[in-house]
Length: 100
Image 1: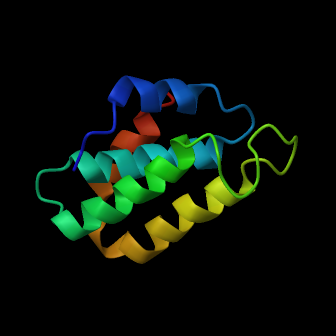
Image 2: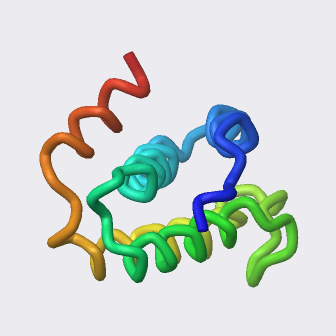
């Protein structure tokens, strides 16, 4: 279930200019997915959300300036909102350290 390639995900995230919130939330979901204590059904939602982010074909093409990543942000934010009870401070701390 956790077959998303880490280097591919990090490479994509680091190249997203001006979308720090999207990157932070995607990293947070990745950390949730890699946590051994995360239930499989939660990992399934996380994988789906991250796959949508990585997919080059989506509702609003990513290359459109200003709006291209809004659908990706919506999917990632929705996943975090629905899985909030499974995200703990350790996940949030590690996600914040990603930018340091």
